[in-house]
Length: 379
Image 1 (spheres, rainbow, N blue to C red):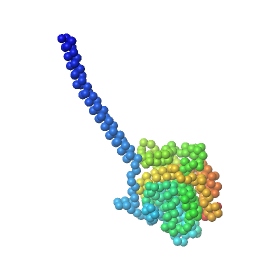
Image 2 (cartoon, helix red, strand yellow):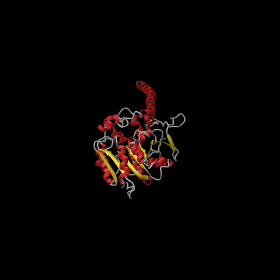
Image 3 (cartoon, rainbow, N blue to C red):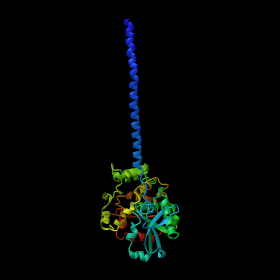
Image 4 (cartoon, rainbow, N blue to C red):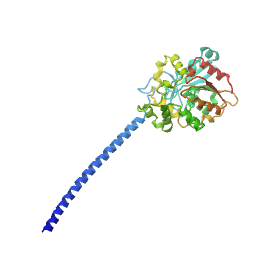
């Protein structure tokens, strides 16, 4: 009887245990399942937030419905995009020398450095005509999401053809616009009468640079600029986020950081500042910073199809000349890399300016000097 009772008690306890375990397990599975759903929702939310942060907004195109107004002369390119331009100097119909000017980073067609500093006497006596244009995404030129180092030279060629500049014309580029001139020498050399590169931006990843030379120059930049270029080169899809986030400092150039200017640059900015720029400065980035500033960084410091140091002389019969001007105190473009390029390309007329920084094209008299060297040199 006792054994039977004990057996009954044990059986009852065991029965209660078996009836409780499913409830405990059910609770555990419920909470673990809930936690999994919460984590999944958080993960999806994070992905959505991250995608939003790294995805640039669409550009505000000029002339589109409810878009920005068109105030400039524009041509329509073969792919349907529009290119805004501005003419300087004598009328092109009576010009002896016709030039296309390519503006720099964070600028537009109004910022034609050589045209701004050329004396009226030189313009009239030599019959100089200059056309500047908004590079894609700047000012009133349509963005080009497919822009590469190869595309702008063909935009320039179309601009020249539609304005009837003739079979050959001169090209002049400043800073990031100077970098474009390398591409002109590569892709449309047969259309050039001569070329000028004014402190052209260098790509630290051009394969012609010895690693020690480019690395030394690279690390002379501010850390914030090192990171900006590193991201533009290796992970370009993060360029928009990097240049809009506030956790870390981004490009000093885009932020107009004065510490990168030398004494001459500072004097130029202080004394040569054009008050009229206040009227158009908002136009520079009006279509959005991604298709202007950020696209410049992605293209300028990305992987190129060619290396400028492998270019051949575009004027083997001395029928024209190519000039590279560089200040030896330039805080943006390393003089050491320009010297190396000039050594690799002996047909380049290299002009190094002692004590000059990045803004030397705006110094009094420089426009006349630059144009004089271009037009009087052969080979």
